[in-house]
Image 1 (cartoon, rainbow over the protein chains, first blue to last red):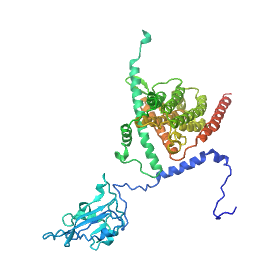
Image 2 (image 1 turned 60 degrees about the vertical axis):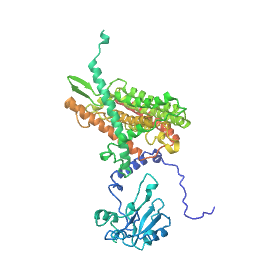
Image 3 (image 1 turned 135 degrees about the vertical axis):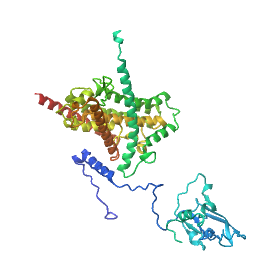
Image 4 (image 1 turned 45 degrees about the vertical axis):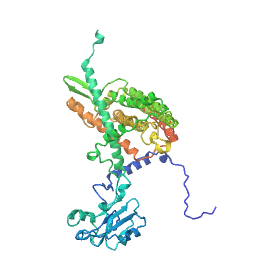
Length: 180
Length: 349
């Protein structure tokens, strides 16, 4: 019969020799191999204490950004919601009232901003769509919750801490690789 | 009335000794489960359990608590009394073996000479074999009472494995007994301790290899751990068991492992003998403590080897298991027995 390729290998049907049939030499060889593994370096990362280094383009949970004066950047334009392929983002806009200039950067802001983390596919298209640099994906990940409702993140979960009143938390939420 | 004269102090002494040995072997078995996981991990380049307590040292207690808290299920169609008796019998048989093992020489306390052995009966090794064979009832009853065809078949498998390997084990043992001329474990150990005499492993290397392989099979350890074959053989005789009853079965296996390590240390590696040291020159109490430590070290090394083998090689198929037992080990053990007998005769005359 013609073989399809010439890569096939003949299977050896040779009966085992006496030494092979004893098995014990091979077992001892195997035991030497496992013993040598006792002295090998373990590749384990002890997770909560140690964390893996992320690449600079890692896409984790979303953060709603503030500007240098601590004002929310989002203007509720809805471009992120349009760009989202998983339809995970909903928002409601509201007009900025007089005296709220220190809270919101532009005249319009997002009164409600929700991302359903169960729908989100962490593609980062919202980040690319945003004209105001108001949303980006951070380095935090692995959300856990007891209910499905808990995975719908509102503004209180997404908004970055104020850089003026809480600079440390702000820097932590911003992540190490972020420079804007 | 003289017949009723009873050495009450001896009674108390033995009871204390029994309590110490039983609790110590339970404690060691507890930590053997931990050591198993740790050794497995280290051999596979993992850290192993390290969350419960420092270095994970509280892990066995967490495991035990988990087993106790689980729902205790007795199948409707199971024979209830036998179903409960099974694990109890397995555990009792496992613990009973420790009574004839000489843990060390003797200590002198309160002007009394206390042997660190519960009972130095003159048929010690036969007693161990008898009790180990009783352990098969634990397997059989457990599998039968479950009223599940897979459990029953697994029990038959387990029992036939235990019985066929006991044969080769006994035959390899006979060669040792021909050398020592005694069935008492204490005498066997003390003969190896005598100045100028070597450990039995020097006279019986083949016998030891056979005994060791059979001990692996008796303890249901890899490569003979068919009862653990969960995915290919539907688990073993303890398939229907849950909670602490399952825990008892698993635990009794670890105790069996410790006891067979102790028996091997006594028969082939001089028991509580410390190599290159004449214990007779030391104070008896110090000699006893050092001897106990020596025996424990030997047991720990054996347990490590058991685990090392487990995490190295895959298990045998059932027909291979029977082949090795009946066609290889038994003829080899018979040959070893004849050879030993011939050599002894040749030396004598």
